[in-house]
Image (cartoon, rainbow, N blue to C red; front, side, top):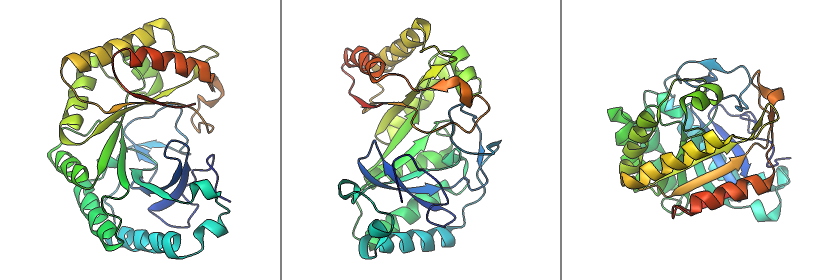
Length: 281
């Protein structure tokens, strides 16, 4: 049985393709996991990937990916997938295809070819431009030429980027994402993304060590958004969401869900900047 709390990459028994009942999308999201080695260049403490390691995605086997995507689309569209998985009626619609998975997908050296393949298969199944194609990314690789090329292609097939910004302070980025970062570098990468493909900021918020994000963190985040506005970085909005599934990282016991009211109050501050917010508590 497929539920919104089960994002197992092994659910479909395939290497690259996995189904997700997405709370945010409100239907079936077809995931493409390019990081089949569980490798990522970040180590976010709320990450649900078990045995996560530092590194990059391997080269994607395009023939295998194509076979799996065609097989899965046929199963969903013409087979009994929804019945087998006991999917509730309101979720029985393909909402998007998400390039995401067990690490940072843009570390795959043939990322552009993956997007090209996606366009080809969506056209085969008469889905091109009728469903969204989403790239969920930490944005660390967007300055690379082949990634920019992939983002442009993604934009042409009704694609969008969900660009991770969980903190706007060096301390917060170090704690949450386990990397070194600065507001300047974040804004630079965000601008590149937004200039090449419609881009949403995706932000995960949670209680850490029994404390919500402090005023220093929330003020810095609002100031980063103000800077984005002043620099004419055109983002579609903010996807503000809480933790739903247990982290598989060592910090898991320190992470707890925030009350919905906290997210709603923070969203109001973001709205004051004339930036749209979508909340998924």
